[in-house]
Image (spheres, helix red, strand yellow):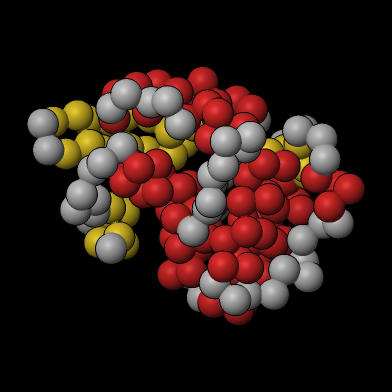
Length: 170
């Protein structure tokens, strides 16, 4: 895999998200030697480059498909900030509203937008708030995996995702 492009200078990733990635990699039996040491993830943020290095390592070991499973392997527990923010959601609309409030904490420049809502379908888009900021496909896949987990915890069955018309989940 080619090296991922350098992020914007003030870009960051959530330390919680990084810990979820490490957890997912461990659950899949992948090595996590590319992860920053635990003391580097004690604050709320880590350098985006650290997250991208971990994603590169995951792809090198498990291919692109493993990225979907990383987010969906997360074990969100009561004290975990994502669980606290998302755990009490009452339905998909509330879940997405909570996700929207959590996003500025999880990532400085990335957001998930609802492009279309229908009774049995939802079209989401993972966007960058910066014109020069590009969301990498690997980042899309991890967010998608986490959203799969959260939607299934809302009781949704038969969750399916497509990217540009191509089925990617399940």
